[in-house]
Image (cartoon, rainbow, N blue to C red; front, top):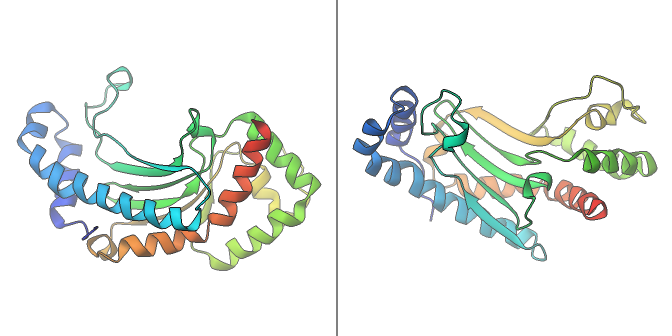
Length: 221
């Protein structure tokens, strides 16, 4: 059961950002496990169970990230991440190209939402074709999305105009990949046990989008 993060959670994340080397990490490893890893795992389990109830026919699985960076991809950075994330997704081998629910906490912000880590060009082309053939499906979802105002559409865009059927959908069809994201500076919510249920409720608003994009991915496959 998620009981909330603590001040020490934030202290550790700032600490590893400015002391990103093995000696400091080993001295603070217990702090990492107790204050960051364990509550993130507890939050992930609760969110996972909540999403399973909303999507009972989806073969969902949950993954919590590691704090260790891939040694092949350090690019001059330290060996540890200063943030942690988890995702709830299907177990497909190429999951980065499928719709995925996620949560991330870092020293200065937390975020959660649903989208693609990296949608394939074929997936986004099929998406645009679907919008062209049946714009009313996405229009309804987008109107509800805009009315809520909780999440923001984010993702890299094409420079060339992709020819949206309406102004309402223009920002969507211009995306190379997309996510629907809530992000804020760290606030009192992260210390409260209620955060888990709140995230489940809010991610529930994105379930229709998840189903919409899951069908598109199935057609590509």
